[in-house]
Length: 193
Image 1: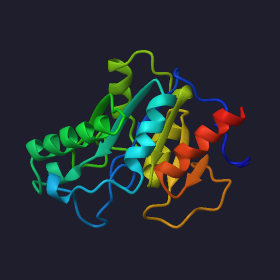
Image 2: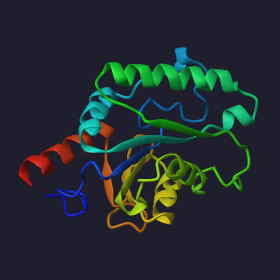
Image 3: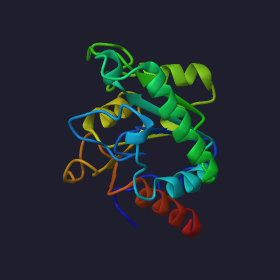
Image 4: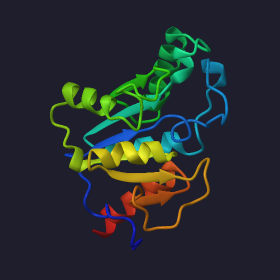
């Protein structure tokens, strides 16, 4: 048992999964933006991971900072096309995304831009059954982890662009190399539990 995996045996359909997008679901282009569907590449194992997580979590939502729209580097229509195509492929692979929340604001002060909690509050309005204490955020930046901790969520850090952090860490409950690695750990916990 992983001493830092505080979720083993706990998660069921009453839980909500919040996912960052870039570096979690798709390969992140560090230092630039995914501006068209042609530039979008699923992270290795992400489709399989989402199929596994679909069986475990009651709700699955994406919360993604997309400042490229606010900066005029891409359009809202391009972002919508990426989101729609991504969701369709996830569904075709046996997974699901219940809703995608995108913050296109440029300012870090915007209430929707992570680590601010606006996108989570929107999700709670759309899905009143969400209990933040029975929610997990999976992301690959400390701002994702801070977003989760501000709402008392469990946090899972993916080391897709940063070196692993030493645990225990104030913001990170769990740490894995990919979404699939973490999803497989939850399945093992369910089987053993």
